[in-house]
Amino acid sequence: MKISTFRIFLIKLKSWEYWPIYSVYFFVTLYWIWCSIKSRSPFYFQATNPGIKNGGFGGVSKFSILEKIHQKPISLLFESSASINFIEQQTKNMGIYYPFIAKPDEGERGWGVKKINNSIDLENYLQWVEVPFIIQEFIDLPVEAGIFYIRYPDKDEGEITSIVIKDMLTLVGDGQSSLLELILKNDRAYLQLKRIITEGKFDLNFIPKEEEKMVLNTIGNHCLGTIFFNGEKLNTEEMRKSFDQLSKNIEGFYYGRFDVRAATIGDIEKGNVKIMELNGVNSEPAHIYQPGYSFIKGQKSLLFHWKTLYEISKINRKKGYKLIGIKEGIKEVRRIFKFNKTYKIR
Image 1: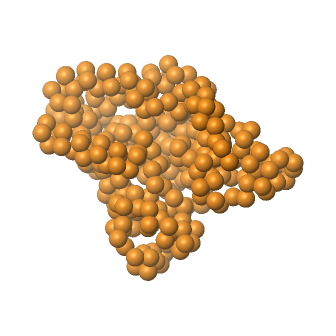
Image 2: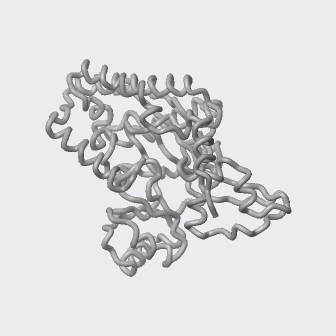
Image 3: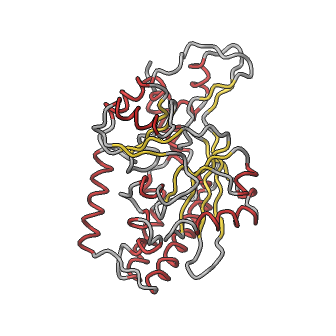
């Protein structure tokens, strides 16, 4: 079927959560330039998280970060040339069984993250992936959240500055409309229609029963249609203390977002979570992408976080952390941009 590019344009135009990254980060870029001048280095952000390569800016091995974390799913790193037999043997040895999650070791914004249900899915993934990738046990817990945590190096306590609760793209049947008709009525689902058709996992002619829920993706990435909700009202002192403890167990980490799964919100408060990923200075306070969230408020939140990032970096530099040289830094940035351009990562 023909998908209307004009409708897609209008949907994205009226909701800034879909705007290109350069438009969302225009003012942040100006602030980064100002901080670079004050720091005498455009790579000042490296010092924010001394224990993570580049502070977690980009070009970082996700697996190397996972190795620093205790409360993580079972995870294995493979080369793209690995055979199915080798992968299945290694995962079985570690107690990972279908379904599981596969994702590139390097990359951003949910690029290449797939749920692998069987050997056919795995074979297709191996034909697609061209870089080292992680296989991670599938954590089937109902609550998925992003907890943004910051702590100044000279302070014993940190704070939670953003909580996002992720709601998977779900349509509800009316007993009359086909799945395709339901998708056509829903703007967020319509943006995913091309992917849904390409993957071929759903019968678009199927008519869901009244109130029957159809979950169109099980991975909490914005690019896959997941809705991000602002969970700031869930922030408690108990949660802050829990993430204080989690962060202190990760050497050289002061700023970033924990992407977690848990059985309940109460479990997140207590720190009873599985940490799926930990993102460093490239983290976003993802609650700002809640549908209808003010663009101005979103910009204020981004600038607040980048101001904090700079201040933490300044403290660590005073403590003796040495930044990467300009020549080496430019080389690394070029590598990251080339990687993102090659694989069309937005």
